[in-house]
Image (cartoon, rainbow, N blue to C red; front, side):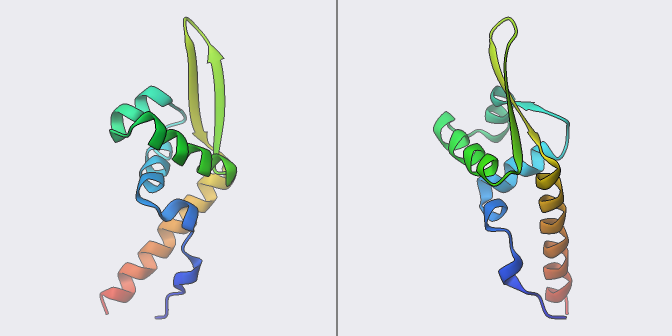
Length: 99
């Protein structure tokens, strides 16, 4: 089995962004504060990764004012599809490595 490593999605493949995508795939929406707490990232690091994912069309951002301003993040359909493709490619890599 031959794996085309050029197919690895470089937007998702960075460790921080992979962690964000994994969390976003687990429930409908995450607040910035919850992502920060779960991932133990600094504000600046988390914002940078979320901006990259948003620019790629993988993450939608919603800003609301409830009792206080809150920003939430969700996977877009494109993001969910890209993440599933990424996971499928990783599975191929694992199978190829098992000989």
